[in-house]
Image (cartoon, rainbow, N blue to C red; front, side, top):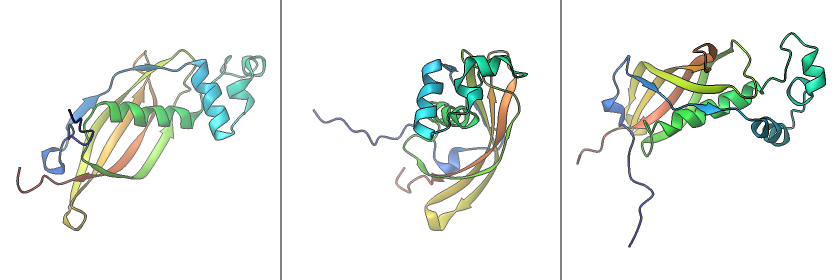
Amino acid sequence: MTLSTSSRRGMYFEEFEVDHRIISHGRTITEADVVNFAGLSGDYNSIHTDAVFADQTPYRQRVAHGMLGMSIASGLADRTGMIEGTALAFREIKEWKFSRPIYIGDTIHVEIELEESKPLPRLGGGSLVLGVKVKNQDDQTVMKGQWVVLVQSKPEDE
């Protein structure tokens, strides 16, 4: 038996419509996430890694790295399957705002809405501008912005 890992589950460029909205599953941010990200990135800032220091800040506790939150948001977006097997490239972060802290123990999810699309036939697909909101368990937006991704066009034989 042969298993194929290249099967398409995602949508082709032509299948997306402006205002199309997708909400991801949630994921809880753990202490292990923060410690591992500090090691991976080299960012050992005390606000992330020192509970005594963080208790003396306005946050009163350690805060997850903003880039950790964005990285997990990217993974949550991928888990929706919307461009699985059809993505050509993650092209750009047009803007990104960190609105609220993410704490250890928070559960975040991603809300994605297609804001613009532009065909790019020379690349075999098109560009999608995705409005992305990362929200916590209290439905508060903790970060938001726009991502630009390139997605394949539907093959002529389908």
